[in-house]
Length: 494
Image (cartoon, rainbow, N blue to C red):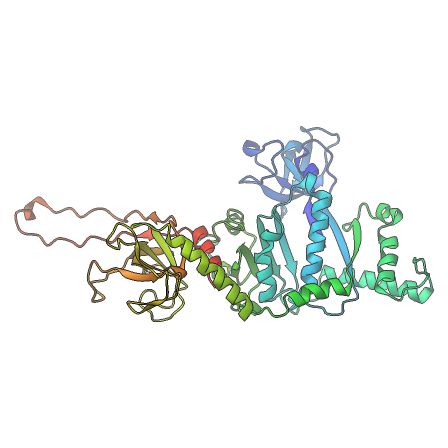
């Protein structure tokens, strides 16, 4: 079931709105003609009494959710006229799984976008579903995180699941209507098919289309909540081909999925999750300010309730074939990045081997290119064969790079802030450089921002200046990695 607000009704500032209709009341000081953005200070209400005539100056009485009634001029009312289209998806494929779900979701989104985007200009998909495993699974979340590659116009996907054991949803009611229509036609011999029978999926599709997509049915349901039902069909062979394509794929990474009810797709393989969905103003601003490919929601942003905090999770496709393909692509890209690295440039490396020195247990490390002695970061290029250099293994075509590493700041649980690693405290030379294989490089010249110091500088009183004062240790410079860059880096890891 697809629902979306009609832009024409929303931007209209003079048309008649019926009693009982839902509206958004905009503040007088921030109501812009033609805008589809909800300004701060706007609120939801229902029309209690309508104006006697058309016009921007018509006076409406609206009722807030708390029962308070207010008189408002028509030009401040944004009409929430919702278009609802129900889709009946017919197939002879008997597997009720994620492959079938993805196939028909794709088909429905394409149909709605083609029919209405010229006037509505879609950019966001909000999904509400029950907890059935063909909808709520790591495989499906992985797919949702990649939908921007499928639909270029898409900016954000928010997926919410209803609580288990709380009855049926509207989609179940639609399914019952379609099944009853077919069963009644078979029982009473009133099939609307050319053969006069319903014995196949194609005949079921033909009967339902002639019934629900007829001019008579559409006209009689113009004022109903569901004003249109479309029937779409796909044969088993089409869905099975897509199913086999992903049959060997295995996924991991959606921790605690059974007890989590809201997910926000960020970038490929990256989602934000939280225990419950929240529609409060603060949480919604946090979500809408980001979206796919942008900064992921911060746990510190929103209403602050513990169960509404976002946790960013990385999803993995862990079958051997996919891992090998991703690994080969990433390593080839790393060799290209190595040629661009200069001393002082930021470099990101994949951390795959636990306990190998820097940042053991982290998914990636951050460092800066170091001078290898000739003004470049290249220590050695293995052009004729492999070898070992400072306990790091190289194969033919690899490049050994000189780097200095940075630590994640101990006070940052999210791991977005870095300080230069104290090599002396670790028992190493203060000017020590470390060797990095170019195949581990995932990005260079990443932009990190310096975090301004907190507090005021130390001031020594005049009375004590004559004595020798111990010099206070300088606070290390703290560098912050933007969240968008964090997501882009995770997408390159295998």
